Length: 241
Ligand code: URA
Image (cartoon, rainbow, N blue to C red; front, side):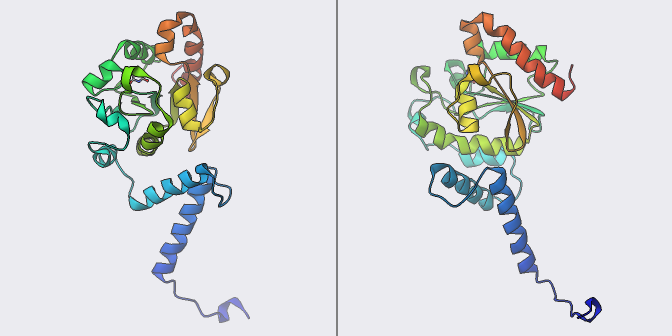
């Protein structure tokens, strides 16, 4: 049959929308590294993220995410925290810093990186020819663990979806992951910061540079040179140097 003899099939809008939804789902799943419908925790987590996005199909803002977070009681850290530390900075920053979790000062003020480690982070940002207002700063977990202990897996599991949504809302070109807790949670791999620092990784199409945490630098000032080298790589890619 010739093309001109074919009867055009009217495109049903519902079919078109469904097709688009399937395409979007497949794109999302492949971006997230979904390779098959198995029962692994990673696959389950990816499917959960998709379900979360489907609940909020419009691009969500940081305000939407903060509203959804509310007076969060999703993990045990809610019992000991003073304030939730959501994150702050430019909502469309090119560069996003992600740390571990709030410490004493952050818990009191409800702002990320405002204590001694935060002052050092501010110096690093300044040395990059940027200001804190130009970048976005947040943490893997949003509530201070008692005695500043490392976040526990269940706490990271409860909080990470919110960080991922923040990353999607800001949509930065670069992420600087500060310390092993940050890079492990982002890449979902048991890696050592000393092995991976200074190398670009990829997360949701964003270039991720892991480097040492500023609190570690306060204890090991001889590692400052390494961090300077790592952030210079970000600067070069951003066209800041
Ligand atoms: N350390 C972090 O990882 N985050 C903060 O906000 C402060 C200290």
